[in-house]
Length: 462
Image (cartoon, rainbow, N blue to C red; front, side, top):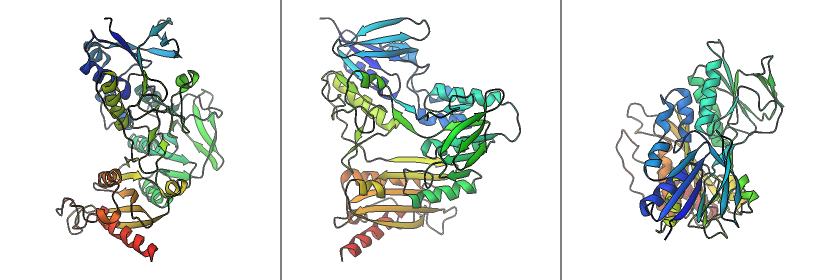
């Protein structure tokens, strides 16, 4: 019998994880694998780009987990600089464009994996395509930004404007600060880090100010102004104009699903492809999708959401590859865990914010505590703030946010496990967490917050 053909669209985390896992389960005599990647790189850490830009990561190649040559050695026909431009679902084929030669051709498939990722949000405003304006989603984007910075030479008082104050925005603000730029962050929201509640975002704002980063809230960009050389010179907003030698877009990303939409595949309210637990596209037996181009189930809210994280993408790829290769796997959903930092300030969240809980009809109480990451008497103990959200009456944990230093961020993992297990805040107070003065107070900050949340639940019920 002739081998089945698996076609993979996208050569990063989800796509190549799927291809690699499928290859482990089926050899080339049973499964031919053809993968298309429109960029120059495969299997890399997009999350590491800000640290490469800052210089904390020395070389671009340090972010690459597996090269095209390594994939080909595993009998995967990986075609670089080749973009799939059309998907013919009834005909079970894809149309590809070789970006180097300009050649176009059709390739048939028995099974298809869509892993097209996400694209940076780039508002349709005047000047957004000017030289010196950069998104940072791919290694190609990161290289373009570094080349742009090199073009500035040794200019004094270099100024960077970061548009957006989410994870990408604050990480790129740190990167620009590390490279010696004067940094201004323009944020449309009430506080930076809209993934946090505003009271916790305020702590981030204060810390950024202390680091020398100017954060302007409530500032919507209206246009990018350029100099005589066509390069960005200023960023205009409804709150004023800010000089810039370089602009970094940190507004967020959107699922890259134009190809799938045009082919009639189902997308959700956030623009991502809809899949079942096996990561199979809903209504299509032989098409799977994973990574930043899909929506996933939020286990706490009970709704789908779009989360662009490499952790999820790699898990999706493993599940898809197992199913394509004749095994079995499922991806049940997420609780929305994410961590970040700006210089030594650590930021973490999992589960629902207050507005998320309201949006799905949940009534809740909150508890916020200030503690330290080590015993207060131990040298180097630094403050952290933990906010916990629990469901009214039941006490079920709904969400946790942490802002602090000295190991604050990874404490959110305890809450992520508790959310996944459906624990109440009262059950959390009995968790047997590790203790020693260099690592934690006798009562870990997460447990202190849980105790306060228990009191809030009981008080609300009286």
